[in-house]
Length: 147
Image (cartoon, rainbow, N blue to C red):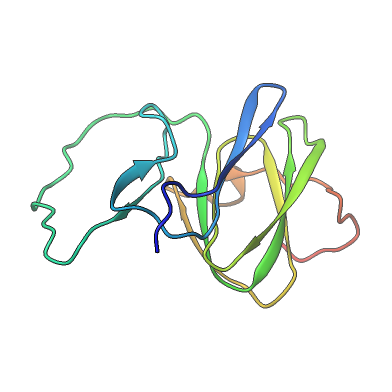
């Protein structure tokens, strides 16, 4: 059984999109993108039948400007809470994610609390420059330190 759409939730605060959550759900055949064509990290989903051919191709070199590091997290197993913060590091809201969910973190800040043992696959723009790539701050779980 497939659905015409995937449940997609956009976390928007003061007109700024902080994240896109794509919940685990089946999709109709074809391809659908949940980000616009100008997004610096794009996320979509496709379902193709047996025998469908995607012709071999290469992606051509193209200079791009990236102002904010964006991340896509694929929750493979477990359960977690993601806390969203605005660009002033003020708490906005939280959402629970479970196996099969995907979150694209586009702007602002974020923190995570594992509610169960959780396996996550992370995709983000690079190259990663270590701690110079992020600024840590106290969130709603102050006093609890890991990383």
